[in-house]
Amino acid sequence: MKLTRRSLIAGGASSAGLLLSGCDALNASPAFRDLLFGAEKLTMAGQRLVTDRNALAREFSAADRSPIFRANGTMNPGTDLYRRLVDGGFADYRMRVDGLVRRPLSLSLDQLRRSPARTQITRHDCVEGWSAIGKWTGAKLAPLLGLAGLMPAARYIVFHCADNFGGNPYYESIDLVDALHPQTILAYALNDRPLPVANGAPIRLRVERQLGYKHAKYVMRIEAVDRLDRIGLGKGGFWEDRAGYEWYAGI
Ligand SMILES: Nc1nc2c(c(=O)[nH]1)N[C@H]1C(S)=C(S)[C@@H](COP(=O)(O)O)O[C@H]1N2
Ligand SMILES: [Mo]
Image (cartoon, rainbow, N blue to C red):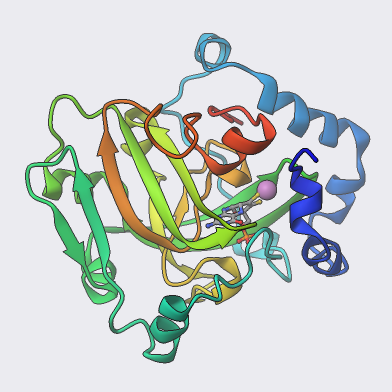
């Protein structure tokens, strides 16, 4: 049997789908859904021709926020290691930064919270056809990569996650244009509260110019690499490897 995204997500997403979000009217619009699915098909080259990849994603006002920011995919990694981290209030959490860097790092949540931060209210668009607007606060990725010192050969940043989805570790990757983008943050807060477990506690990526599946939750390790074909099954991300999703999912 071909492993499909729908078979993997089983009941989780449908029950979450019962929650009302501020984007329900938007979600119901066929034109909007076509736009989301169509956006995934755009190649990076095509995207480059029509948009400036350094431009900011649209930001919203506090009043635009969805009443509930739904969760999707893994809602709790459920491993022994993760359970211990939750029980300890993430005091023992360390985010490793390694690979093609001069100074590998091991950062506590406190260190990440003290790093240069950004807060942004943005719209999250999932290929499954829903959107939600939330307020995210997190450490800007660019200064952390600066601290680690990217080697000249580094071309991509890989995010290794704590969850096994359908038995395989979730991972994602982005290029340096997105890694250094001002809105690319390692978020530790959603709507002024510590990031909930369902949304990727203690740290999840926000890469606002791309679709939802690129926003790795439960980030444990960040690796700078020169090529993606030796990571996972070779296509740069969990869904890219399993469901043929585009690696570059620009919106
Ligand atoms: N580690 C991990 N990251 C993940 C996923 C996942 O299952 N595991 N799902 C992705 C998908 S498809 C979406 S739409 C968003 C959902 O984020 P949310 O749970 O905060 O809504 O997380 C993305 N990042
Ligand atoms: Mo998604």
